[in-house]
Image (cartoon, rainbow, N blue to C red; front, side, top):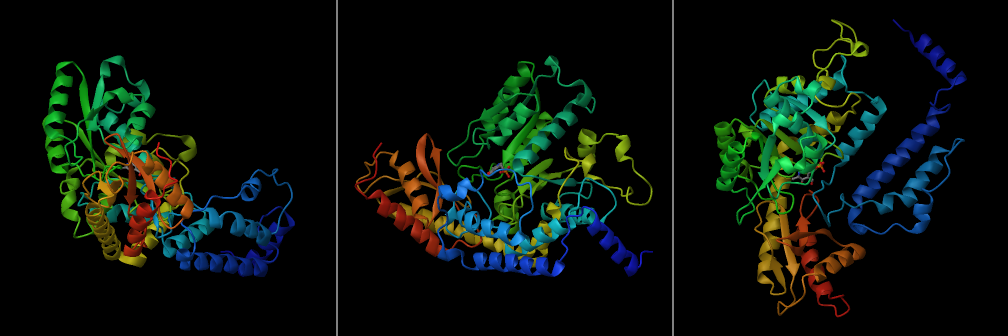
Length: 495
Ligand SMILES: Cc1ncc(COP(=O)(O)O)c(C=O)c1O
């Protein structure tokens, strides 16, 4: 056993050598408290600042500096952060942020990140409590999505990575574990299916996996933006007749552009009928299951074989915290586990432990994403998270109603969840669609609200993705007001 005396001697020894720990912990402690206070101030006063502002060249120039060879004072380094980074973030923590699909984070999540940084745990494997925290999250996600006890899961950077890993798992399920060594042959002729509205990371997953994005069939969607089940079945039958091997169907639980949710129960039926792995990309909407108002929209999600989703979006966990839930954890092991002498396991000691995440996914070194997720779920509870999601969807509906009552605005897609796509068309409806990109640029420059720009049916659209738990009716009103004001300005470029 180490005594305190031993610990004191070790600390003195370290200082005599090259340790990066401070000589004066008291000064560091004070500085740390200051940094924490600054961040609390920032979070507490978000409303008083613009969502986003362009970083001046003086700030950018500071990050084109020579490599620091000598030490700097932590207080000075923090001052650079405070003046040149903090005011110029992308703004997704701000209540007026509605761009893309990004979560707002929380104060508890921020604090957990600090603790995780202090612990500096590597969750590749071994026997330590951080691994148990990740296992806890896996158990909770099983419960959330009514998955069986055999289900496995893993934290990944985000849904892009989780979708990619799911493609690898589905490929291995279809062709067997040996495919890892042999690689795909010309004869395998794998094909997969998703709607034409699937997120761009899915075709990229096919590119990265060597299957090729041409082998991902983009199936037509109906007027609500959901995959056309009849067209899907026809495509599968045709591919089989032509000698292809259908192996995977991917449903969207919230398409990126408009938030449409595919008929997941019908997709399960198709997967069973044609022996396909059924994966769901739930990056955006899967956690909606935590809201009693929204859960019914996701019926069938509990039947999928794998599910990608992001705690860092609607779960409000600070970036990054993507997750993949897999119906049978053994499928993950078959796809990723390998023997390496330097990762030898032991029955006891630090090299013990019966669950090493490096056997279940592509990463060996892995951060402690589970801690900020655990803190978020424990601190706020899933009820409050679900209520925030319901509130986001109610705001989306009021925005859509407002747009429909306003002759100068046009709703461009049905509102299924928390995303509203619309256009400024002018009081007489003759405004060229291209003005919408100028309107969005000006909204960003003004800094009160920040939606993003997309195209719906080929037409430029203002897209408000309401994901942040801080967004309120006042922000929605400000969006409508600002779009109308900017749109009616004479100086707006019309092409
Ligand atoms: C439906 C959908 N799938 C996948 C992704 C990619 O997720 P991530 O950014 O976490 O990699 C997104 C991102 O917005 C998304 O909306």
